[in-house]
View 1 (cartoon, protein in one colour):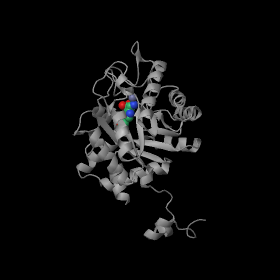
View 2 (tube, rainbow, N blue to C red):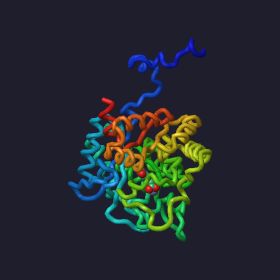
View 3 (cartoon, rainbow, N blue to C red):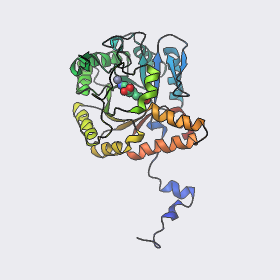
Length: 323
Ligand code: PBG
Ligand code: ZN
């Protein structure tokens, strides 16, 4: 059918017509809210490079989680900032670590909120890399042993989903075996399968003080130039037993989200990261863009690209706008 028999504008004429033919829907069910947890009590520390976001002590993190739950958001993802860092990041698997405490407290207050825990070592190591180093380089298999300990400690605290994020080869297998051996076969794994070495993580690293002290993460995170490799990474994680696969960052990688969604038949997550949040907030604060409109457009684009789950610092705002 061609013009003038077909006129594309006919179905755009009114709001009702547009609603009838709308292809993509963003719902509060698609959102997940990240929460940063630190020691102490009564602490709310605003993150300068992420206006509107803060680091919270466990007691306050529980309130934030409850607010997310009340807003209809089905899940939160926790990040920990430990009291002390060391070469192996051993606080990560301490049963009394901030994330373990937060998991217990949040599940007690909101049993029906899905609690996920980012599982990595960069916030916990004094050198800021995502695992143990051997001669200055990330020792993959030694780091996997510590990852196995860490996810187990989260499972013991009552986590619903662990989210290994260090881009270690074999990290899903290491998590699955460790969880199953101890009877946690119901704990799910969301794999940061295609995580790029990205400049968009800048504000996050300020927030959790996890910038590498030397070198960078290009030896384990992916080269932004690569797409086919992302599919390869995802397929490997599916084979190892991932329950959800993730692409990260989101906005500059929507082509990757689409490729992955076409390739695998599992729920797809994307991470709308700190730098993406900061860009919108900075421009909105200047009055250069309409924050609410840009947030909804951006999150809808992530859905359109194929993500089922969107981890976003704008989750609370989007939940409010979706009411
Ligand atoms: C580290 C980790 C990163 C993020 C979450 N977990 C990135 C990194 O520093 O390499 C980024 C989140 C964000 O920027 O919002 N494993
Ligand atoms: Zn890391």
